[in-house]
Length: 162
Figure 1 (cartoon, rainbow, N blue to C red):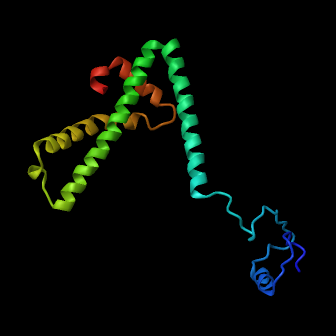
Figure 2: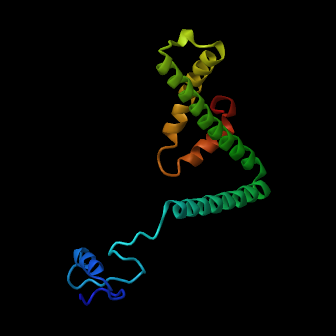
Figure 3: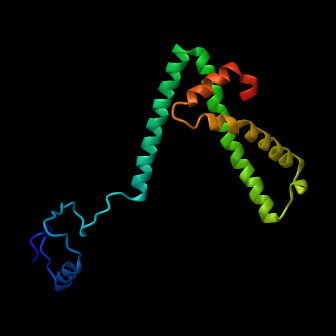
């Protein structure tokens, strides 16, 4: 019996054979007994990782809500710009999802832009215009802390940037 195995002694020969086939830890390494049979113990399952993700998401939402309330109370004019910017970003992501659906429909059905229904064709055209308008803002916001410059530019040039 190996001295590094901390579990109960095996009762049958089959268990002993399985124990001998288990990979051994390197010399000098200690194995912590976590109640698992193999040297590598996965403590997380998919449901567990989902609950961690859910907890992180809810914490982030709560912190963001506090931040927004703080902005609303202390800097009301800036809060208006901030909410306009965040709602615009959310609308942009929603628009990207819809454009992806239209593009996948075009590729699956082998349609050209002129063969689309009017609303979808208009949506594609408007999306191109919006993206061309947003690219310079995205380039300005790339360097660290430059996103604050974008907010200031939005304050001074709202019609051109929003």
